[in-house]
Image 1 (cartoon, protein in one colour):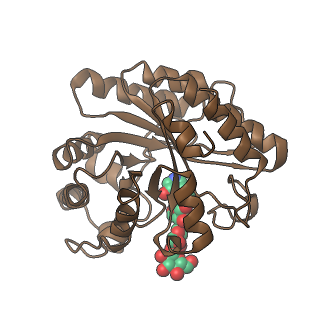
Image 2 (cartoon, helix red, strand yellow):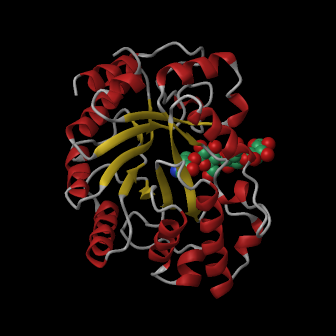
Length: 302
Ligand code: G3I
């Protein structure tokens, strides 16, 4: 196939990108998006600060635009993200104890309920672990204790029982202390029947990142009986080094049958949270880069 989405679809996978609603009507941005991708995720507008700026007052304008754009073109949608220590609205930051717990549960039911039936996979909880495998000492962890992640997954399951529910994190690009801790959490959730369906590997990488255990790491999570997804891929660099790293990651996903999709964190170097790192598949003029062809080739070889 000659587009990323079509090539991925041949092995039953999606190939997606993060998007911002303001650019959907830009002709170069929109035409590349619509041609190449069969999945999208909101880069920012479905986060807590955007969707619930005041307690109990929801704003779905940006998210709805993205979901509508996707659904009218047959693209699937990832949801990002229900609960995260960052990009919380100001009113959440001062809450304590059961008031914070109730705010979290209400937020999950409000947002996941609004999009019920329309989201392929939700990042229910984002970035809750430190590099050493300990829990991040966020307001959620400190106020609610270790059980908060499980509570969030149970609430998401009630709000949208058909979405796949994912835990999502970065720095999990191989077998290391952080991915070990997440692995143990998933193992525990599975053994106790806590609803978790997938783990997202963000994969914010550089051309020289160590990818020696990347595939093996995906596989061990898949062997727990869950799906794995590459959720925020971008790789700083250029030329063949960048292309080779993209190829390695893509080959790893297609080698793992439960790796059901890849999402890149933006697609044009003109719009990346990484500024001048040129980490994406299209240059600032929407030309295909060497990395693009490496990815397409790896998808077509699946
Ligand atoms: O909304 C304001 C806007 O009103 C204002 O005009 C503008 C001026 O700078 O700032 C806007 O907010 C920014 C927002 O992006 C939207 O552009 C925030 O300052 C900025 O911090 C925010 O950055 C986002 C970041 O998450 C926040 O932590 C990035 O775009 C986004 O790519 C990044 O994505 C995260 C994932 O959600 C989780 N994993 C890591 C990944 C990269 O950091």
